[in-house]
Amino acid sequence: MARVKLDLPASFNFSLQVPVRIQDVNYGGHVGNDAIVSIMHEARIQFLHSAGCKELDHDGTGLIMADLCTVYKGEGFQGDIFEVAVAAGEYSAFGFDLFYRITTTREEKTILIAEAKTGMVCFDYTQRKVAKLPPAMKEQLMSKS
Image (cartoon, rainbow, N blue to C red; front, side, top):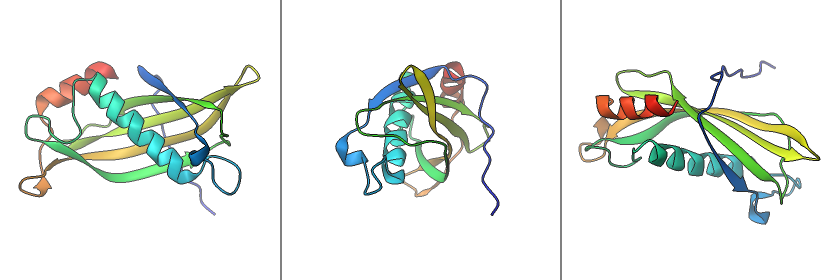
């Protein structure tokens, strides 16, 4: 079986801590894949906010997720504090990618939980169509990465 491989940026200039809640744990006793996606959503919103951007309306342009790739590397458990690092890159005329690295620390060891990428496309929600990446948004995002 071929495995997905991600090329992450060498550095991340934004991170936040997210505590793992009991509802994030699935019947396997570890953090579920759906919870990882929700944690990434929270990190995305906070990253955009820190760059002065909004997901739904940035000068008339919103964002829509075009793709998501997640590579799970380790288990997370209730009580862990995830460190979620986010960086933007791979800009195009219509969007960009966001990269994520999720880790936790247990017994003084850093454990890699997941690496991920979301393809973000600019979207005009009024006209319901793809829009160009505003130069100001690109500049704001580049200043955070």
